[in-house]
Length: 99
Image 1 (cartoon, rainbow, N blue to C red):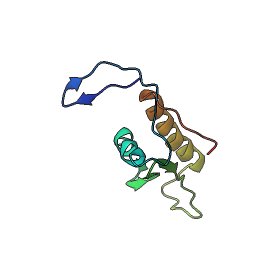
Image 2: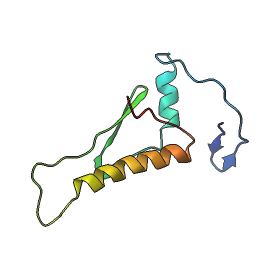
Image 3: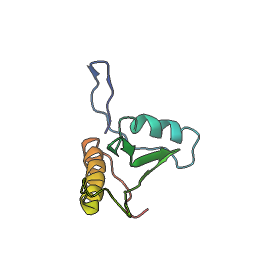
Image 4: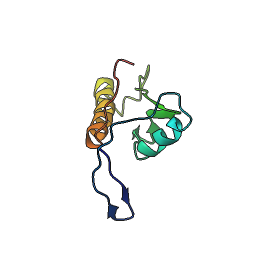
């Protein structure tokens, strides 16, 4: 289901039983519209990258780090993925985690 939200207007939910064919001309444009508000960053660094009709999360791995700022890499990675999954659920979207 989908609806339009624009400048205070909230449309009615409508059933959508079709998507866009992968590789179609309008696929990348629709992808940009659907995922426009999805941003994942930490300390000003982006960890989510969108290209054409695909999204990738790049999780940080530091070989050396400043000891004054301890960072639990596993926690950061889990938080990044959790942020993406929460956004997906909130927007009634699913992801292909095997891809």
